[in-house]
Image 1: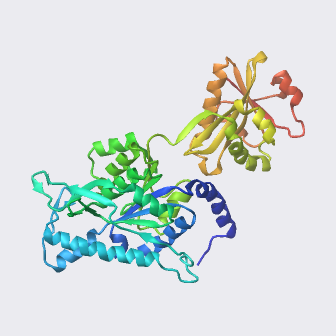
Image 2: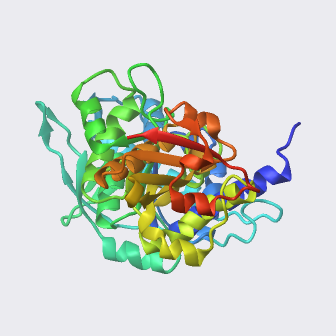
Image 3: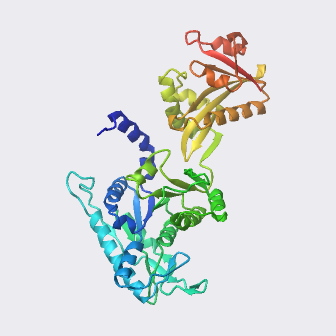
Length: 439
């Protein structure tokens, strides 16, 4: 068996640090079907939930019971009826739903209570809170079919759930709701999860499902979707996997109404939850209200992020070292590329107005985000800024990336063609090559 070298773990752990800081104290609603229990996958998921809990993430779990209900109905030789993907819950089906919910809830609580030494759950001491947090009402007649005891969420008792979360409990919500008159309704897990995420102002809503995420028409996984893009997929009415058909509309609703991020990931991949949350690329589809990446002028608050971004390039000799003080003084020269709140690229433009020239400097892209034209986007932004300043040419000094600039219409020139003030500062020991591009 091959193992990853320690350096790979160290690199991953360091890369996860910004997410660990960002997630502490945040509320995540995680929804999964009863298949996770019936297929024996919940133990692995419990390990990941324990880790998130230990990092200070506030967890609300929403489970389903469809396979367990089917099994009970089959054992009783009772009818299994659906209308538009919703169970028609007659008296016999409701009895099976109540039995299944009780079994699944107890099993989840038991697995989250594990604490064996030398296991991922050692010293976990997780407390699980469940109860009548969901008020429901009947769906009634839909498409000419009376859905009987099938209902929808009317209200989530957010205050009571928040109190449990404040006490560091994991809150477990079942697909059952109760009416003020004491009736019980069978609910869909996606309805409960979406309403809970909205009521709690959750930072993330995560669906664990059969497929790895949402795919385009060519079968490629869509890592990031904006709400408008997702709405087009739903409106196109193309054939979608069943769970995507259920969860994607809910993801759109949640995202439009204020949930920061909605994730659709596979339940079949061990560690999928951690891979999605603690790596840059993720493993499934993430839905956002708008584009994740933005180009903008840098501010003083970006100094620390820029220093982290350029430090590896300075250590490799690709960039000249800049002190924090110098960077703070020159911050208005910088453009930054931001991905989901994290700086992943920067570039600076230093104008020499008297000679109608501008220096492109400190062009850097985070190693995990290279190869996707982000350098080109920064270059284009710098060129646009230079044209706005009525500069006629852009020059760059480089020791390592000559070909990259040549491929983008820069031409090598002699040091004597630099602006006079820049010539006086040229470092002949470093011997950087000079490239110029007319604007």
